[in-house]
Amino acid sequence: MSIFDIFRSLEEQRGGNSSGKISWIIAGLGNPGLAYANTRHNAGFMGLDRLAEMNNIEVKTKKFRGDCGDGNIGGERCLVLKPGTFMNLSGESISAAADFYKIPPERVVIMYDDITLPPGKLRIRRKGSAGGHNGMKSIIALLGTEEFPRIRIGVGAKPRPDYDLADWVLSKFTEEDTKALEPALENAAKAAELIVQGNIDQAMNRFSSK
Image 1 (tube, one colour):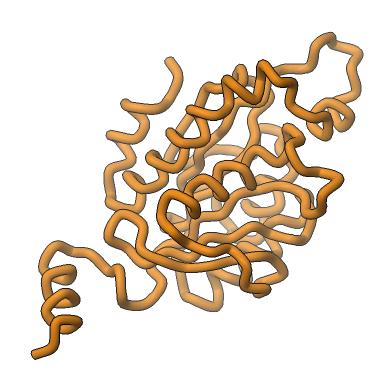
Image 2: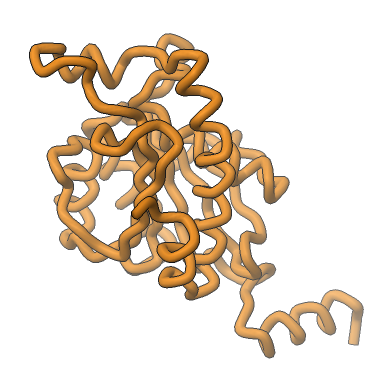
């Protein structure tokens, strides 16, 4: 038996799947292109980039109408995906990947921006409605269910009621907001790792804002 076979056997005994088939999809939502970099609506992209960086995964393969890569996260082989369809059509990319790998919705983790949370705060749930978020509406429609885990990354509320919502979510983070966001991105990545290990309750307890 080779070293590789021994390692794979140990992973299987622990319930892990780091070298087998893709068993989870973790997607971050956002809009592609430099014009949208560092905007509030791209917090999901930013969280996914941090997760990929922490796990030495290159997100550069063009597939499923987006950018993706795969690797070992929490002992599981995961596909990390940044849809390139623009926010409102996010479900087209994510459902294509889920169909290809035959991944059930409960093994699809979504990171995305939330204007109801201050920058730096997270909220983790195992299921839920779109809450008015167009990217999530698209995903729910195409997966056919609301029952998939999500990591909501706070980007802050509109500065005043009459401020246009589209203008707000497409605005750049301030320097102060960026500082608050940094630890949240790392915690979002850690939460995703716990979720794929089957520890979503622990992720919620550790990282969801009260």
